[in-house]
Length: 428
Image 1: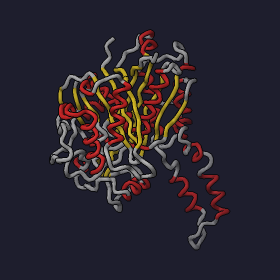
Image 2: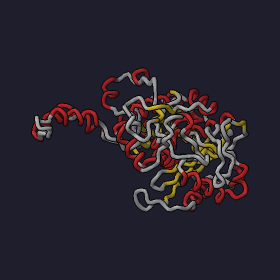
Image 3: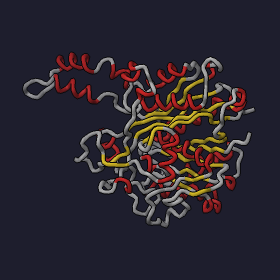
Image 4: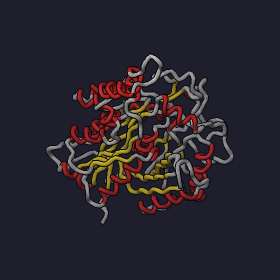
């Protein structure tokens, strides 16, 4: 018999705040974290806006300076968020079996130290402007090795999470772009359901506000170019939408087996009851132009949760403001829910936080949990011009009081992966 899985800890680090409370306030009040890029000179880029984290001080949370020195940007968000979620869950290493406590995270695939590598290239140029390869080797050893190797390990952060939280169980990382953190949550869910773990730190972290990623996503035509109105640039489901805005951050939760949580007197935020993932991609950026795979994922997740569609009270949508995604997502919801689709409040929080890529699924899942806890649905801000192909209730511009017992979170990526998580109010 499958074990029941609950959420006992949560943390969020996004461009609108450090911690769950600040983020929830910004989400419900529609306070966007998008602005002109300040971390580098973006004046030559078609997109010059992003959602950047400000006033983040990892030293206030992690005292080991050696660990912080080894982490690239994005990993430090993940480490701090993991520590915050662990503390929120009230877990004490001396009181639980740490061999049954693990980590499943999702993160982005970044270049660890382009700055150090560039320094090595510049320092090894001869007077003709060409790179002296012998000298480059010497400079690279001085400036890059060994930190670049450590930073480029996509699972490096997991070692430090395990060290700080004294975990001895499963330790796994997923790198599947925009669905990484939601698939990590799904894998953690299964591990606890089948008794492999008692509790797992799970979620994701990412940082894509850099020249390379802005170039990549701009080149694919996925980013908004509404640089004159940063806070209004991200417009999911709106007829005038022109793409998303990149952001950075982390969302981490503690999943725990229900009886284990009860035995230690833990507070319980909600219960995770369903998960499914599908794909409609058959190569990089080769995605089928239909809604079938998304609808199948929704149906399978509801079947996993043993729920009929009419019991869903809220959907936190992927809503990335690309022309194709929002149309397909809307169509898939109608296919999966039938007439009930028109009675479900649906919202996208990305215009507030930015698109956090690998961290987006976890951050949006936490927002879904908060909607249940507060019986309040965050709005889809910047919604002005209805699209006849996107004709559902997107909770435009203002948060709404709604009795939410069951909610669903949709997460997708540009390579055709779809992930659905179903969560419900806990009734102990």
